[in-house]
Length: 395
Image (cartoon, rainbow, N blue to C red):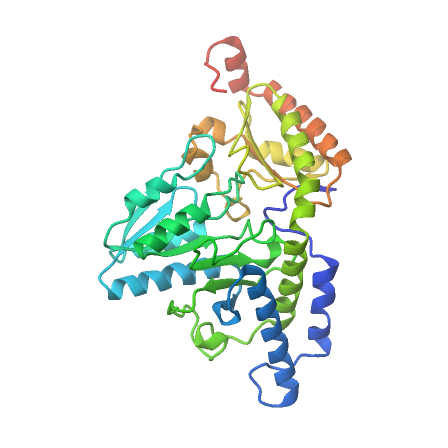
């Protein structure tokens, strides 16, 4: 098997697994308990919180542990909305290519009377122009939420520039950093980020755990009520093994990010070059401002679902878009936002690799994809119409 769907989830590292094990059968006390055994768990959690905060250049108390990126996105957006609502500010700015954890939360707020402006992205690349964000801000704006890097096309957005604009305007700035965290250096102070969402299983940590960074002057709204855990902002007994695994994986990922990037870029570029040889294909997303392990292509005249199933038969795990929408028959909203029409967007392939992938695997992926695309086109009536001239080629 060749695993090339790391944007969906990653294999847990040995470092993360080893960090978790003692907290499963040795240090298993409830951190809310007052006795020493419970406080040993509490100390472990606070140590993990401090280590994570140090990697982001923030204070430990600004880190709230969550079940993952989606919960962190929800809490950040809802908190900023409630703060704005109290001041009569009910306008939120986001983009057309956000993860559904953001877009669906914004849709819920729209039903409550909030106004939402979705910034259009640059065609082909998916880049956001910071000046468009600046132009969209008005006195009623309470939040700007723009993702750090896109989960489908890998485009890295100009977060520092957007953060500076939001700081000058006095507007809270949140970024969904699920795809970026652990793969590139993030400094929340230098980049003027007020709130940031992270999920551990995107950087070789465990599933079901993540965190929200929230600047200390932002009063969070609870979306889970009950106990007083996480400074009263997120009820529920803490998942200590997962927290310890996440902290260890995050440290390892951040410390090795540059070395991993140096290994990944030649592999990624080799993959892009190989797939670009397929006629009537196009790469999606920015070439220069792109996550080091992301490759996303559209192939005209085929369906992405068939492509994935046949690649699976050849032992390749890939995706046609976000893992969270894999059951949907609709084309990717991200691909539509960068200008791909429905027929082309349906024929997409996302490959996301890590430092564990090899050059031999890349060669095999290219060879297998070329074979599968040719096979699918040969049996497609749409392709026959295209090559016969009955229909015009788009790509």
